Structures are given as C-alpha cells and as structure tokens.
Image (cartoon, rainbow, N blue to C red; front, side, top):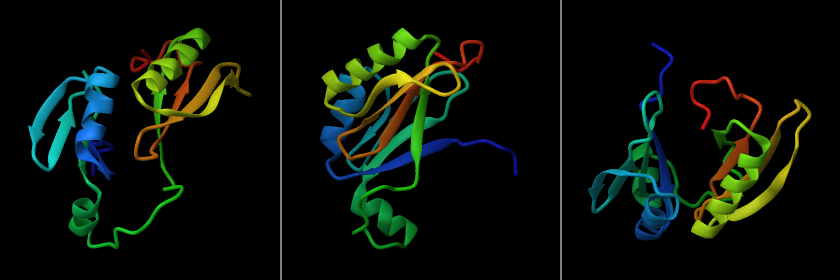
Length: 136
C-alpha cells in the first residue's frame, strides 16, 4: 500500500453548519455538494476533506454513533511564521471555531495553538516548517 490519504472524512452533527464553517467561514472551495456529503478540495498535494452526517458515517463503519470526547486525532495546519499561527487561529474563531489553546511558543522553536471546529475536531496550527512544501 502506498503511503497516501485520499480523503479525510469528518462525521458531523449538523452538515449545513459544518459546510458553512469550512466553506464560508474558512473560505475552502467546495468540490462536491450533495444532501449527505460535502467535500472540499484542499489544493495540490493535499487530501480532500469530506463532511458526512455523524450517524451515517458511524453506520457506514459499522460502529455505534454515541461516542464523544477526545477522538484520538488532531488535524494539523502548518504555516510559515509564528505571527501567522495567531492570524489563522483568529480567522478560525471568526468562522465559528473555539480556541482550545491560544498561540504560544513551542519547544521546537516555532509557535502553535489549537482550535476546535463546531463538531469538536481539533486543529493544530503550527509554525516551524517554513521550508515544507505544504506550509501556508
């Protein structure tokens, strides 16, 4: 198996709210928009992010839908400067995110912080990888 992730699908409690957060709030371009599926094309070299109703996604996986709390996963958004970390966190908060951990200096020398989207998915915003091709 080649090391590649084609789509990251998030189970969401309110699909229109999640679509608005990512699409209008964060400005991500919608790739597909169906009654029970919305996806965003993230750009060259990045996976697609998809949204699917929570219950339906759990059913698709054959697991109970009643889980909550920490999900054992975070998504990362890498930027080129410490200042951009704070800017991205502010953009996410204006779009409806909750700041879980404000921007602060990290042990590796860059800065990082976390926000939670409306369904509680944790996004880490971090600097320190300025030469990485995927850094914004």
